[in-house]
Length: 340
Ligand code: AQP
Image (cartoon, rainbow, N blue to C red; front, side):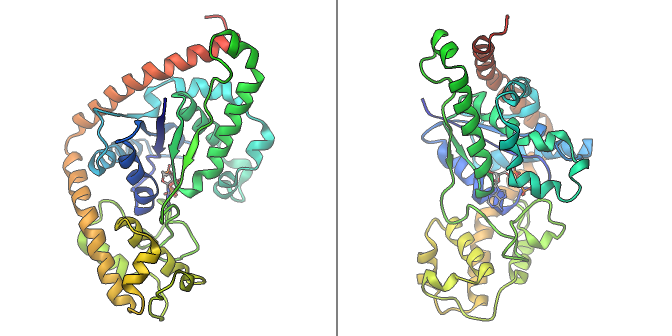
């Protein structure tokens, strides 16, 4: 049985990186898989959050999921904190994961920065909570951006160690040779790592202080046009071969964005625009982005006035998610040897 799980943190405005790296894939997978899409609010509080803003962000990410085309009736959309099994399974997996594995996580090193003594224990444990998210549903496929690849590998290592450590008990309880599947990361296409519009070496991110570094999903047409016009570039025209993107990270990024939105390869984009100057290419990119994002932004703004509807989607999704996660946690407790 194939099951997809993924999530987005409610930590601010969703941007084009989240959209192309993750949400577009969430939408496509609905045709072939059972999908569970989570708003990972427990992950969000690994760094300080204002309570009122957190609540608004949870609803906003939910609205973005629905506006982008996720069907919450055929699949499951919910927020993590409403399913206690995520936290419960995290504890058990904390006792499977090794300190040495977590010490190698580069996202922790980046986010903790120099103030390592002063970040939350939760920030350090973030990848184990992510493993629990996936394993609570025994998910087989996880669509994510490139930046989450290392965390996915950790989730596989945890599953594998659990399966090995408890192999006898797993068999004894009728689960065969392995209890947790090793989840496959789905990281494909020309925009698995969308970069800042101001600096082609930095990832586009919610926490970048400059709003000009990113396109938000609910930016209006004028804002999108202005941000793309101001996006950093170089003075040369576009190359017609992919090799010509080397050493031009800002150009590479814009070509990747164009390719992802237009559902073609970077090589195809360069066949069309090779030799063109930036103003021509940027104008075409603006048209493409506006056509794609305007309906999503409009629907997000409509849904922002439907708070009780959003909350009911999350409540319904949470109860369906809980039913699956509860079965997993019961089985895990039996395997580990708890009395219940
Ligand atoms: N720049 C990106 N390009 C491609 N994919 C991206 N993702 C994030 N940024 C990019 C993918 O979006 C999904 C949800 O991300 P998240 O919100 O859970 O985590 P994040 O990576 O912490 O997002 P940000 O914007 O970078 O937030 P801050 O600034 O707080 O660190 C994930 O699948 C992620 O890979």
